[in-house]
Amino acid sequence: MSDNPLGSFLMPDGFGRPPLAAVLREGSVAAEAGRYVLRARDERRSRRARPYTDRSAARAVEPVILVPGFMAGDGSLTLMARTLRAGGFRTYRSHIHANVGCTANAAAQLESRLEAIALRRGTRVQIVGHSLGGMLARGVAVRRPDLVSGIVTLGSPMLAPAAHHVALSWGVDTLVRLSKAGVPGLMAEDCVAGDCARLSFDESRAPMPADVGFTAIYSRRDGIVDWRACIDPLAVPVEVTASHVGMALDPRVIDHVTAALRRQIDSGQQRLRIA
Image (cartoon, rainbow, N blue to C red; front, top):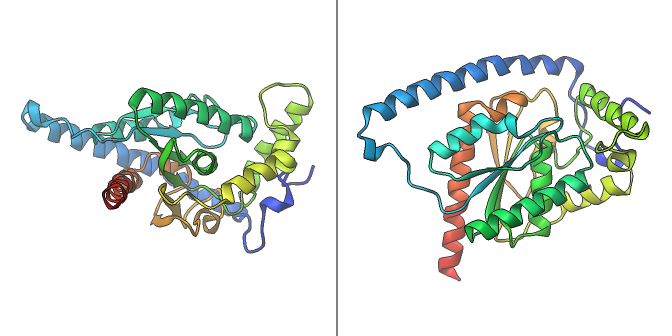
């Protein structure tokens, strides 16, 4: 296979791979993790200083499901989920233990999970998706707006899924080779370069339903994907300063996620009042 096993249609004109040295920017994840630790410590002290009855934030109306990126699992979004819960959101795991399989199957699994949550809570669900998780979120939102009220994507190259660092391509290539060797549950060649990949890409480019909120968070410091591919023209764009991996835990980014979720709830309620 070539150094980019993904189909050429996943790299439209105008986009490209980050340069090899760009991956060095991902070293800032240590500082971003440290920033989270310091913020969490300060917030604990602040809560302890308040009366017990004032320690809990008002519960948000809509539940939130968090979807991990490529080769990651729910654990990668644990810190974000913890912060969102402290802010009053009811969060749910996607039940994706390692996002390394067929994207169509992952989307079907996410859709099933959304159905269960919506049935349990009696309301639509918001999705926060990191990288590939955001691309899954967008596709499911297009297909099932009855389940999804809004999505927030983090460093998700929806406009050009193949516009990623060569190191990521090596990971994809390895998965495809292992799949050919008979290892089950991994991305097959059709998932990254065939009809399956094209279907997923076309779905992720389809128009978003008018009543589904959409925020796309991106960083020009992203060392893994072309940040330009993360700015969907149908989304509210939000620029942050963070590494690709660090978006999942930098408290400054989580603040933007929180604001986007609340803004989308408010916009949905306003639409209902007008209707």
